[in-house]
Image (cartoon, rainbow, N blue to C red; front, side):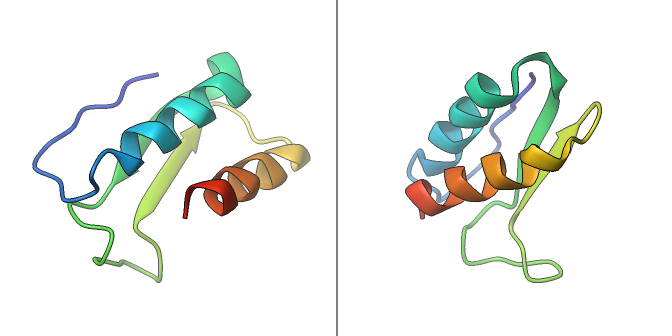
Length: 70
């Protein structure tokens, strides 16, 4: 999984979230992309999770990671 940090005001929360997803989703996680600030939003979201393939349980994995993160 590739995660490249550019200027950010996430205080490391984005990196923790990306690591949790990398652990939970293994080799299917392609990339985690976040906007430069948690206050910024596009279509009511600020993080994009890209997977090689989507399984039904992935929705629960991502949402539970968000719940423990936010």
